Length: 497
Image 1 (tube, one colour):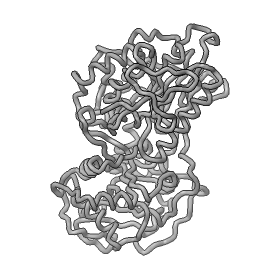
Image 2 (cartoon, rainbow, N blue to C red):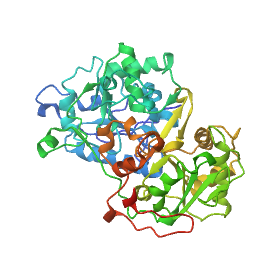
Image 3 (cartoon, rainbow, N blue to C red):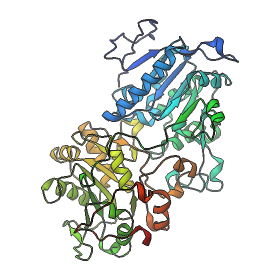
């Protein structure tokens, strides 16, 4: 993996040794102006000591959002008349797994040699006040190991965190990536050297922010997260806002009108033993917002109705069934919708919110969207959309997958992971949205969920599904589109939930 070249500012030609000058058009890292130390109450880091790392994605929409964020930082910093470095993580090298942070650390550590003191990580939704951030960082010695962030903690032991700290789940804090988080030079350099010799014990990347904190803490051999109140999630007042170095955009992205209801075809995976237990929950909650929906089972049941794909039910994996759904989607047997949503029969989802989110993506591009997990990312592994929270594919993505000849190695292979391997082989990115969830709401910090509208949760059999749907996924009636009756679905009034 070869690092990309740095862009050299025309006003401040500072290029780290080993990097070649490239044109503005081709630049993937850019230098820009930043705050002056004379404005600080304390000794602030020199601006060129801070590297901003945008946790960006390759998908066209997200790449554009990252570039807008880079330009926001640029224009903010121009008036402050110093220089610094901004990295879009998806452009750091050609390796798609850099989103998991640890593989990127060796490359980040050489960006500015001994000049850098801090690495500030942020998402495309993170808003930063550079001058305030520098004052915050001045409280900490970059020559020591510091791990800074806005703390999250588990309200109860969680399956997505492998029930870590089950005796006292709230005792372990990990950063809210949206509020931004920072590593001192001393800590990042140690981690960059450590990551190859002592990688994480698990091959899976599930909840990155928690796993990063665990890896840094290292059973007490490294620093725990130091809470920084100026890394803000949702300020409660104007006075709070003035103190914040960062804030978060907490609404669904606004890319215009939601996609049409008929542009989303919904495939629900089920089996005979769950026809009477789970399907009624689906019908009484989110399914009434779908126009085109089919239930795929191991037996045909006209009372639902279900479609028998001719694939035997398996206790796990369901790869054979999922690929049969992909083939049916393109076969002409169902509506020619732009988008395919595949969910489990124990998934609860907000279709109105999904349609609003999908307006940001182009179905003519091969889009794979949902909650992203990773496997073996330290050693050139692959990313995949975990199935429980719902997997969304553009028609173009389904076409690319099937035309490639990629198939299941067995009917009970893990469908989401096989699809991830296929996407990786084809060089197609999987796109992460934090609004999809593989587990129940109780498995996530309440403060984290409450900051913005969510799209999906999984395992509704393990909670009160009606209550969960009303609390987390149901929008006010006056904000919702009326969905007409269709031949494939029985409609229920939401007052009956």
